[in-house]
Structure formats: structure tokens, C-alpha cells
Image 1 (cartoon, each protein chain N blue to C red):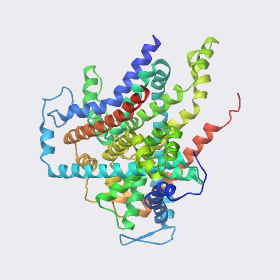
Image 2: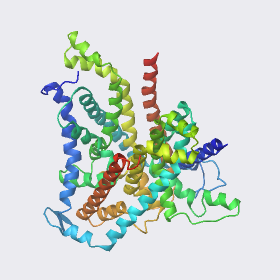
Image 3: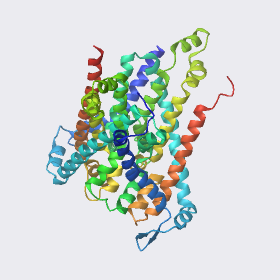
Image 4: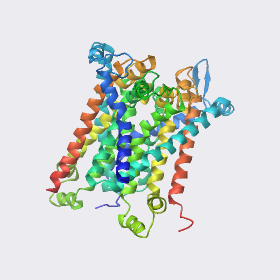
Amino acid sequence: MRSAVLWIYTALVFAFVFAPILFSVVFSFNSQRFPTIPLGEFSTEWYAKILADPDIWQAALNSLIVSSCTAVLATFLGFCTAYSDYRYRFRLKGAYLALILLPPTIPLIIMALAMLAWLSKIGMSGQLYSIIIAHTVLTAPFAMAVIRLRLNQMDENLEAAAWNLGGSEWATMRHVIVPFCRPAIIAALCLTAAVSFDEFAISWFVSGLNKTLPVAILEIVQGNIDPQVNAIGTFVFLISMSLIILAQIFLVGRQLKGHT
Amino acid sequence: MTRNTKPDFYALSWRLPIIIWQALFFLGPIVFMIAMSFFLVKNYRMTEAFEFVNWGRMMTRGYFWDSYWHTIWIASLSTLCGMLIAFPVAYTLAFRASENTRRMAIFLLIIPFFTSYLVRTFSWFVILSESGVLNAMLGWVGLGPYTMLNTTFGTLVGYMTLTLPLVVILQTLAMANIDRSLVEAAHNLGCKPLQTIWRVILPLAKTGMIVAAVFCFILSFGDFVAPFYLGGSQDPTLPILIIDTTKSGQQWPRAAVVAIMMMLTLFAVAFAGIALAYRKRAMS
């Protein structure tokens, strides 16, 4: 009995967490300008509106460029750090790891201000690559964590065995370690791309006139109630979810294979 | 295999990229922001200097301290609500759910991190508004309409949207690692469920619980979306103050002062949390 109460409560909290996501998808197909219940008619008006808006297309393109470049850079840096942490012990390693792991614990608004000030100072603000730089700092820790977990699963003697068989360190890296980490690398690419695709605070500060989709949403929301936001949001949600599910498939799928 | 030899070219080529990158684009910005808090602004242009003008100005302004204590208050309130609302869920997932259900639940709770927080907030804006979904539903049972937007309640709904998934995950992980036999032993010895939670489970899960609370505080403290869109920003929180100061009037140095005060506060909270987590229990 008490168990039932606990489960009902749990379901309610999950409902609270997912209500805004669900409603934004529902509202995006709803004809009302001020959505309420009973719902209005089914309509694709808001989708038609955003598809006809060249600003939104440009923002979507910007988002795509930013998130894919961020993913590649962050995953590369994350891999280097994860491998260094896995294989070597060295002085100040704690500080070294803190250097990559700290950024996500600092509030985005502070990172946004610091990035804006610094990038302006060195003449690199207001460009698409400004967002890429900032997002790489922000997402590299996630890539590092995913790849580091994968390296934990690697047999410690695998690398040494390859060296004994005459492979150089570089050849071993290329033919043994990178292939072993491939699922984690792909998962890291997806995760970092998804985080970058949704980030708005830093992008808003450093992007200048180059809006990404979340910044476009921010600007629409600042104006008034406009259900276009739900349509864009649903679109962004679909992309992010596909990336997360892909990441999950690569991580879990590989693990299952490893067990059989 | 972990060797402690002098780093060679191979080792350095894996170790250095992140050091260079973070020095340029993480330490650089943070250090520059601290330096910037001493710069001067003349005729809307920032000039490099070492003056305490901005600090003196911000520290003596009533609106800064109002905003500061308001932000601490509302982030604390959010942490309290988040921890209390999440606990029964985490308890259920940790002790009543099967391994598979728990894993599925945690996967579900990760999803919100990758959906736009802005869109979710906008969704709440529409749901909570005067003629919105919630008031329409309450109207069916003869209640309301209530004003929920532009209130502390609205801000808290936003904060919960942001923090609850993470808090539930962290609490669940903290409790899932507890040795079940200890909990069963407490039951067998006649400990009532609430007593078991208070005397056995919470002490064992203390570290994880504190981590959850600290993250809840950090997220709420630094968020500008919930207080701005759902709370109406009549009492601006520090993040809103940073945005206002940065975006209007080019007063970046003053915004830097606010940002540094925020970071110092968060350090203090994090250290207090760590101290609390590792404090030896006085009575055991």
C-alpha cells in the first residue's frame, strides 16, 4: 500500500518533469495563439511560419556548424585528456584534471561574461567561431568522461602487448586504442553536439549578430507569446534526442556485444 | 603500465592540447574577468586600469545587496524544495525499483538535460498563465484562477524544471549504493521506516545528498531564465543584474564585480558542503 503511494508520487514528479516538453510539442500543432485547454484545432501553421523564415534557416545552419565543430574539437581534446589520465601519472595531475573538469560547474552566465570580455579583448568575439571556442571549453569534460569510462574497460596489457609485437606507440594508438574507443568517441561526438545545440546563455553573449537557434528562441520569447517557439523547440528536441539515442546505442550496444 | 618517467614527445602530444586550450580559453577569460573588475569605463569605453571604483560602487549600493540576499534566499528555497520533492522519488527508485526500472528511470531523467531549457520555460509560461492550461483545469473543479506567473512560485517552478532531474539522479545514486542488509537489519531490530531513513539511510548517503544539494544550489543561483520569465524579475537576481549591467551601458567591469561575488559565494557553498560531507560524526 505504502509502495503504491510512493509509486504514484514518483509518477507525478516524472509528469512534472516531462509536462513542459510534452506540452510544447502539443502546442506546436495547436492553432491557438494563446494555447489553453480545450485545445484548438490541429494546425501546422507554426511550422509553415518558421520554415518560411530565412532568419530561422540561417540560425539553424549556424547551430549546425557550431555544434558539429564543437563536437569534433571537444571530443579530440577530451580523448587526449582521457588517454593522458589513463596512461600516465605525473605531477600536478589533480590540477590538470581540474582544468578540464571545472567549466561545467561555473554558472553559464559567468562563463558568458568572462568569454565575451576575453574574446573581445583578443579580437575574437562576435563570430561563429567565438561560440565554438566557448562551447568546446564547456563540453570537453563530457567527452573526456565518456572516453575515460571506455578506457577503463580496456585490458591493461593490450597496449603493452602491441608494443611487444613491435608496434610503435603511434601505431598502437592508431590500430589498437582508437578502434577500441570508437563507440565512446562517437557517443562523445553526439553528446557534445547535443549540449552545444541547446546552449543559449554563452551563445547569446558572444555571438554578436550570428544567432544560433537557441538565441533565436530567446529573442522571440523576449518579445511576446509566439507559438513558433514551440515549433522550433520541437525541432531542436528531435535533433537533440536523436543524438542522445545514437550515443546510447553506441555505448550500450557495444557493451552488450562485449558481454556475449 | 602507469609509469612515472620523464614525459617524451608522445606523452606531451596527448597532455598538452588541453592545457594550451584551457589556458587560452578557460583560465584566460576567468583571469581577465577578475582583472576587468578593476578597469575604468570612460565615455562608454573600457580602459585598463587598477582602481577599486567598481568594487566601491557595487559594494555600497543597496540594490546590489538586496539582489544578493534575494538570490541566496531564493536559491536556498529552491534547494530545500528540490531536495524534499526529489527524496521520495529517489527513495522509491533506490529501494523499491528493480535494477532495470532504475536504469530506465535514470535514462528518462537525463533526457531533460538535452531539451531546450528555454522552450520548457516558455511552456510553463503558457501553462501557468492566467488563462492557461493549469487554471483551466482548476476552473473545472471550481478553483482559481490563480496568479502564478511573476511570483516566487513561478520562479520555483522554473528552478525545479532545471534542477529536479539532476537532484533525483544524484540522490538515487547516493542511496542505491547503500548496503541493503544494513537497512534490513534496522527493520528487523524494530526501526520504523521514517526512523530508518533518518538514522540509517541519510547518514549512509550523506555525501551524495550533499553533492545533490550543492548542485541544486549552484544551478538555481546561476540561472537567469526562471526568475526572468516566470518570476517577472521585479526583484532581479544576480544573473539578471549581470545581464542588465552588461547589455546596457557597457558596464562590463561592474558586471565582473557581480560575477566574482557570485563565484566567491559558490566556492563558499561548495567548501561548506565538502566540510559537512567529510566531517566526522560527533556522536556515533
